[in-house]
Length: 171
Image (cartoon, rainbow, N blue to C red):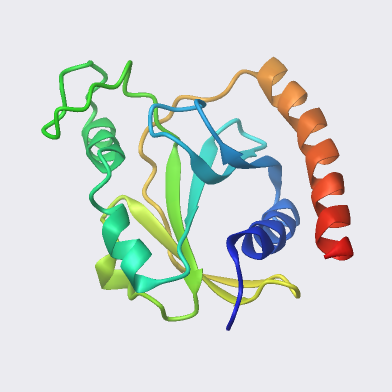
């Protein structure tokens, strides 16, 4: 399978939207203390999911070095304080999404290779929106996003994805 991140993002968005996700934003920055999200979605319940797209094993292995994984582990353990991380990186808070998934081409990585808090989704055919959840993600925390922010995000999302479809169709 020869795909790029933008193709996977678009297919994944359609697949997730058809399964009840309220809105989705690619390459979202500064939403959480975890840095950029390849794809950020919010469910109707107000719970947020981060999707990290990896198209090579090397990229997947390097990702584990990011300090954000310590944030996920701390938040899952119930911590909310701003103690410095082992890496020395200082987060403003421990604001992280409720769920975290890796999205990879089929069988690029095994379920055993992903951290305990992370889910795993396999891409079979992004154009036909064929994805499989190989492992469900653990709920990292129960905080929700306020409804007004959800409404604003949803309006912006539809504008973005319409433009994204046009760009990919013209390429």
